[in-house]
Length: 40
Image (tube, rainbow, N blue to C red; front, side, top):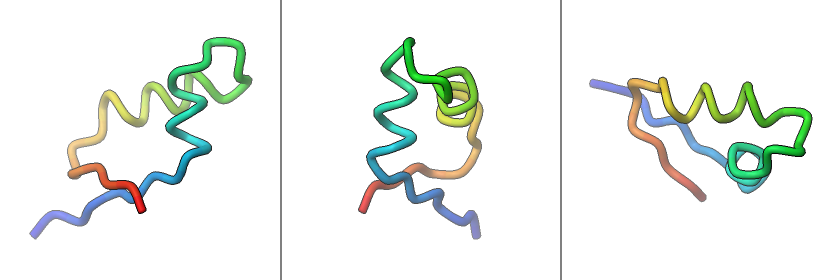
């Protein structure tokens, strides 16, 4: 049974904002995660 990754607004926002220092890591996580993604 897969475990879902719960994302709060920080990683979601960073994945969209190219000027955010964490943009590359957050974008990579969201694009490559094999687990289902969820938001609270």
